[in-house]
Image (cartoon, rainbow, N blue to C red):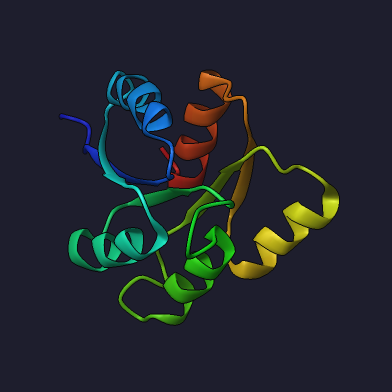
Length: 125
């Protein structure tokens, strides 16, 4: 029986991050979709209904925590797990992310093994 391909929406304003994450995730059976802004991420989450969302905290115009709160308040996207990927790692930052609705926090710079293990753990695969 073939494994189900899981769709990951990456919402981050850094193109280099998208370019780095795509091959890592694809090599572990994930399909990636990219959004460069919070607004674009919200629209794509509604349209594509990904299995999980990787979300940056600091982005222009709409910050990651605001995006997460919007996702969690919309019945169409409320059940999609959100993992924050950010350089901000103080206890207050992590607590604020969890209060916004995130299920996990991964600190930049990215450890590919930690990223994949976290995503698979959240998805139960």
